[in-house]
Length: 236
Ligand SMILES: [Mg+2]
Image (cartoon, rainbow, N blue to C red):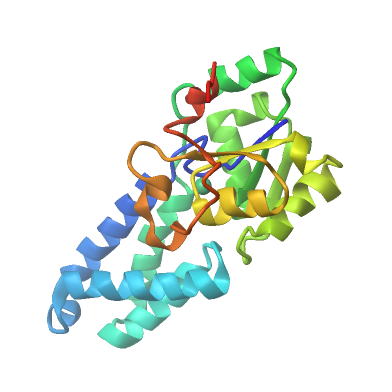
């Protein structure tokens, strides 16, 4: 059985974050209040910093943006309507359809043809996860019974991986493999939960698109692949 992470492993979400965060900086950076207080680049630095702090305390919940923008509005003296508009721009991250990465469908079919079951252990907002399953039609490949959604307010730790693999699915971690793009929330915690076939999907651009918060040390026995489709006929 192979458990895949979802975001940026089977479908891209980092481009959505980059796009709408960029649009938010453009919008706010054009305002007098922001220009008077250091401009777009300072605003971007502050949003990044505050978002990182909120990620540590709130996990990946979309409600995080409300907290981030409250703080930014205070620092840059933004009117409530401006703050709400900024939240609206960021909200599009969660309403823009995603599609599976090239080769994911073929890979899951290839595994299933060899009687290797596939599941998903994702750390994301529940509602957003269901939408992404529908947009991408992943539900045709992975039945919902084989999906474990980790609490969005937490951090997808070894406890969460174990809760999925052992408690929910009743499997021995030594008999499953994991594949995900984050050293911090996929590779290391699945390894700590007992998985001994861990694949880091680094996209060829660095794991997790280079998000610094996700970069931590992982076991050297971790197998590196660029994309999920590299699992087909994997040697190594
Ligand atoms: Mg991911």
